[in-house]
Image (tube, rainbow, N blue to C red):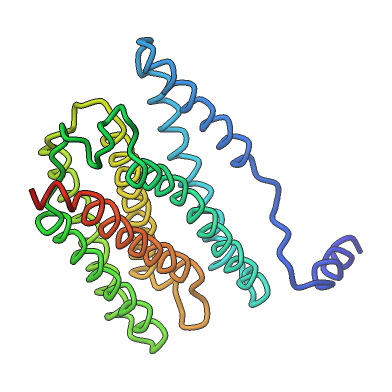
Length: 274
């Protein structure tokens, strides 16, 4: 009788009510430990708490994603209505990320358009030698633009039932994402202003560094999708995880185009010309 009542209640609406899970509270505690450990490390108390918090954050992400994949693939809870909700959630998340980067661009333009007396009313400051935008930054632009086409290739292949094309497209995209990260790491290691104080290094590394962090997140996201594609967990009608990863990657592409044009090219144009 109880089983029948539960079955009836289960079919009264098309939504998925998730089972109780320990991962949200454990994830919050882990993030708190990571943040507190980072602050302590900056004040000379050692990195141990930060490292422990980081490892627990990774562990919570892995098991939480595992549970979501189980709900979608093996338990069949992600019907069309649930998938719509997940898409809306991803769209709102990307919108919040847009606001996140808007703050960094605001800081850069505020100082670039109205340089203060402390830096001689000149942008970039005379003590700064910025990157040539058409050297490594341009190479990274080509890499990300190409990765946008390969992830679209992967998505298009899935919609047409081409599993081989799906796997190849995702593999290429992950490889290009790793290439971008390597080129940016090399670029940072050769920055003439890497160890200088001031508003230009602060705004430059904040904007480009957080974008680089998002590239690492997106590459991880796509790597998970690649492993799932190899296992055959995506179908032409059931692939919200891949769609979310593709949306996120295109967002990363667009942000980089703004960074290249505004920060690398326009923001350092006068200095490069000299």
